[in-house]
Image (tube, rainbow, N blue to C red; front, side, top):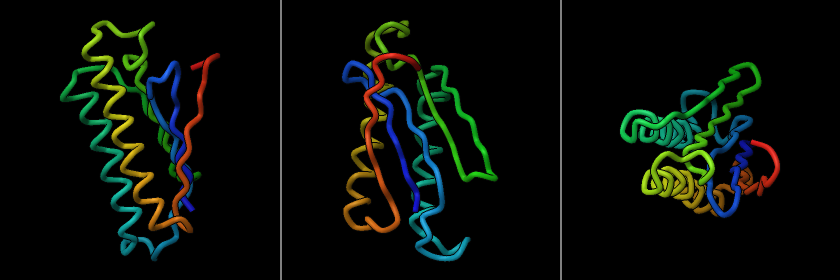
Length: 120
């Protein structure tokens, strides 16, 4: 199962962590894994390349784990308010898409939100 936890502070989404394999099919044939991987890279590229905003990501292939954060989605770190809303909106859109997927693939995908008011 793939477990995805989104990070939110003060109502603003600012990142996520994905852990595990979906197990829907064998490697190379797993359409759910391919969809999640593709959407993850879309989110990273939108924030980093299209919005030209810093995004941090750590990939651990051995643990099948990726962590993505963009502090520019938070009011205390954002240089531009419009960009802050855009970056947070990209994360929220990804969250909404995954929640829809999890309804159909509940045995393979878990999505949750962690409200983190203390530490990034």
